[in-house]
Length: 284
Image 1 (cartoon, rainbow, N blue to C red):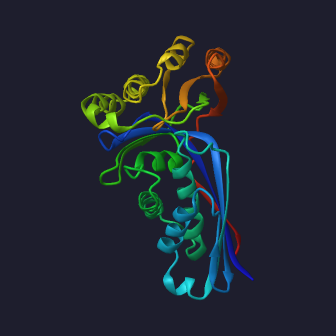
Image 2: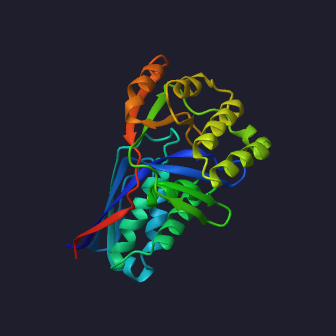
Image 3: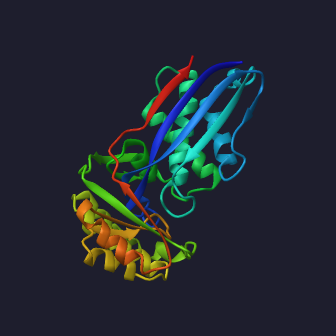
């Protein structure tokens, strides 16, 4: 018997400044979404997607639902995602946030935002789907808009709304991400990109981030440069790649799509998102 069912909706994000080199980063919410549905049933046990996020989801369940509840009830998780997995578009952060929010409200009437984010980032670290904890990614997915964070201490330094008329044109190459070992040797340069973001110069920060990542990952910079020449405000590899995101006004989308279409891969267009995570109680 289903005792309580909740449904959480979280959106994805793209990078402004990668946090891997300095543990401080910035990200921007986009409208691709993840929906997680959680059910608390009578009887002991748990179920959820065994693929991709099995360990992550188990960690979240154990860290959001009290032991005494799990001893007498079962938890069932269903996840649906629009975000491509493994391309730097914050799919893991969005899933962990959505599951943590849905599970939290199985046992509480109202979730604590900070507690949900802390559980999600800790579970991501434990599951090995992130190196820094990805508090920048998690915060952008959860709150939307621009975020700047210090991932060493899970601190949200700044959160502000992005212009509603912006879009992310995302190029997904037909290859996987490159070698990340060089990023740690470029901490001073990434710190410069971070300073640009903290001063509100997000597009310069994003463009510098793209140049630095292309160098560190030994990948071509041409798609980003072409997107900027076509009218993108900012263009960069997102996360650790290989996806490239170019942010622009709607009138420039067609031109940016045209330049991306010259390269081997697929293209997604997603509106920038300012909507905070939401959860609905379906039963209970």
